Image (cartoon, rainbow, N blue to C red; front, side, top):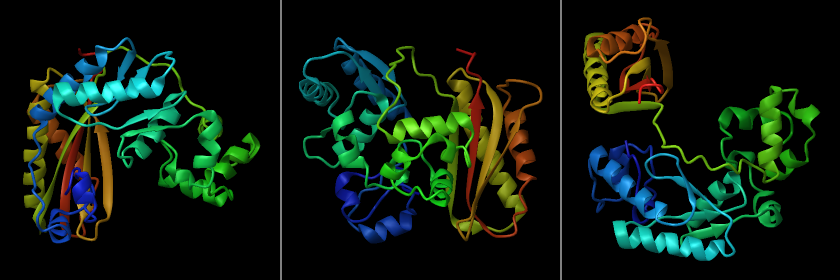
Length: 304
């Protein structure tokens, strides 16, 4: 599967999550590169170091994303300087969204990816003209299940959701989720920038097979190898596993995920991790050929 694609490749219809064979047909001249996590980690560290050189608060939000917070007179100029610093010091371009809270900045960053300047802004004043007519699925953190529930309530757009009262949302959502939906639909959001180092809560690994797996023994063998490889990466990073999840995608692209908590507590034992993955596999019926297998390890956040 395609993990990500350059802007040039996207113009041919290539996008993340697309099968490699289809991507090759869409863009025959594309160059396909294997995953190189050590290189990504190193580049990420250099990007974050470039951002930390500015008089701002920095919250790392993964390898390729961060929130930068500060009270500045000219946020646009700051964005220009941040992009220039990352390009000069790391050789990478980046998109920057400017907003008065994380919600606005996050969504503005999506628009920035399509802007040649790589910078876009959303504020309380521009929020509704820009976002009001868009589907609720365009909101940060609103997934397909939430979209379906909102459609059932007759709230398909951001403006519809923003105008809804809390009582209406409480018909389908618990109080906390209902209040959160009200806030983000109106352009509100969290403004706290947490400067503590970002720590991954989980790590995953998956493989899409050139030929679908039909024999259970082959599926178990491949899953065991995958779980051991993932476990080795976790151990090398000095972390421990507390929960194991398995993802299975059939030849019809139907995808299921099951998980289990390790009974013996956090572990670095590859046998235990592999065994847990195989025990989770027992929860699947496996009636159809398997196209993809994935393993996720939830990590002990107290082990730093």
